[in-house]
Length: 356
Image 1 (cartoon, one colour):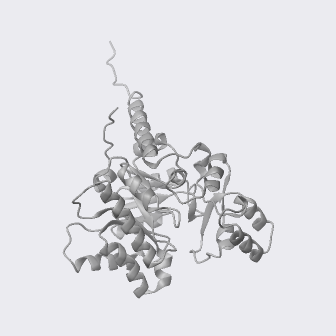
Image 2 (cartoon, rainbow, N blue to C red; image 1 turned 90 degrees about the horizontal axis):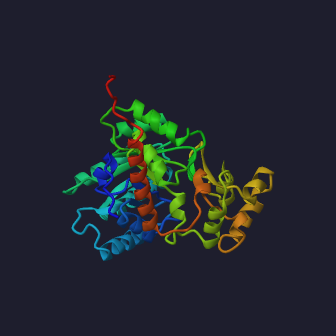
Image 3 (tube, helix red, strand yellow; image 1 turned 30 degrees about the vertical axis):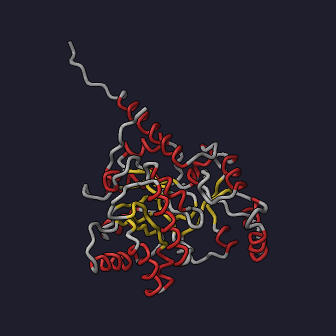
């Protein structure tokens, strides 16, 4: 069955068919996952976080090769994917190294850049726009800025963000522990920003196409998914991690700093922690086990070891996910569910009939 195209401000901006983002997940998102999400009608982001310059270049090249082999959007002015950077990492590198990292995306003509978790977005936005002025281009890079509260959304709007990603407290991986639930955050942004605001993308704990339809009727233009795309053959999560996610129940996740402490990835801004599966690692951390012992446990179990001492990021909606499935199959399911729910919602409204 041929389904109609789902049209929102976001799908029009990127010329895509399904208002879904495969969110960037550091060291987990693969070129295959990004390519499959994009070919499947959504939009994929590579993750530059924690990656070397050489790795970022290689992943862009690999993704481009996969899209070319699929003859996807041949002749497009830009490579139709995005790449995401941590703002705090760019700040930490210093200007020269940060510029080198950003130049990889700009010189590769990647369509979109995603910035998150930083205090100097103005600096990096200015660099990107100034760099673009140095060469004639048919299309400027689209800037996605992730926000965790209304103040950050207002700042992103003032910076000229092309897309604002509103990440609620339910999100897996890193985020603000004080962020409101996604539906509340999206609602507050829609109410506060003027009508000429950029597309608003909802993120945090989503798992189904029906939820996408609900967010579209609320006023969001798309939904970003992380955990659901971890449960594909294309993500870099191990078989054991995927099995743990499939087996997880609805209250299996928790926000904590335990994972970053145990991995010694402690440069995140104040107030930023993570959501993942609540395992022995977190329980040991909460009970006061020496952090050096936990760091060693994580190293010992990094590959193929005890899943209880691995870091398995997960959003709050993991209990609604029951299988590992192909990336394009997930997008097809989403598309069917969105159309089904939007059509069903129309039956709730009846034209008023005059009284006889």
